[in-house]
Image (cartoon, rainbow, N blue to C red):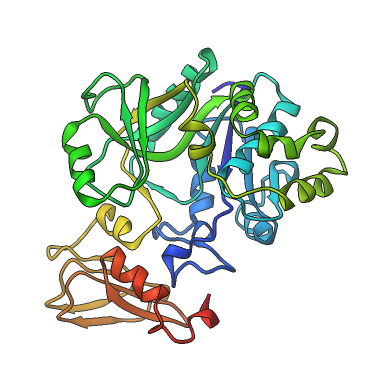
Length: 364
């Protein structure tokens, strides 16, 4: 741990794929999805405390969610809470946080971590990120953490490493060959069997000066909106400056805008038990403590008869859940919504976007 190392927690998404637990007015990163007694963003913050000094942890979120951060992480310094006026995906978030950190420390090296991920082996995670930070501090690279895939999952992006098959226990960085957004199931199977591909975790590590240079090279349409940042960020005019920059800013991911174009993309292999909370199927696949019938439950007392491979969640830990004859289903019970739906992502997506869900807008 050094005072040049920083963590930026990206906590601005809406979590639309995780309804009805996640809502537009209280998205998934502010919920206790993992049943640990604290929200995902709080868990992410606590994880970062083992990597960098607490004064070097910044959180980027939407203005409308600032109260959640202040409530769940009251010890966070106000200057370490960066507020976006509008959701514009990860590229503007990276640009804003990079300029903010460079203003404080031009020698900074940064780990960009999403707030909506579940990590099952905290010690492996800490060691991986610490090693990646140390490597990036000494080398001009844009590093992404590549997770060793445990299955041919078409719901994740994939990164191909150069040099052929990479051993699962590899503990050093490798150069990136290709990026592939969510492939179809057949291609995901090919990727998984090849041993050359990793899941794209969305966790990045780099020197602030290096990512600044590459952003200004590849996404000038965004960095150009931040011209004059040196005199605005960290002053009383920052809020108005950021509001103006974001009004004209396009939605763009840092993967598409920079990582797929740069010549210095590297991958650090990781195998620390990772779940991107982006779908119910992803939660089910990595849920610990399934019963003998493959059911994953985070709720109060249950009576299950002939229920298999089903995920069961409830916000009321005192309510009994009684189910019979369900297989491969999602059962989610919240104070105002009970959802019972087949578990595969396509059916779930069609269910939420179809005309059969009357009145859905009233419960966003």
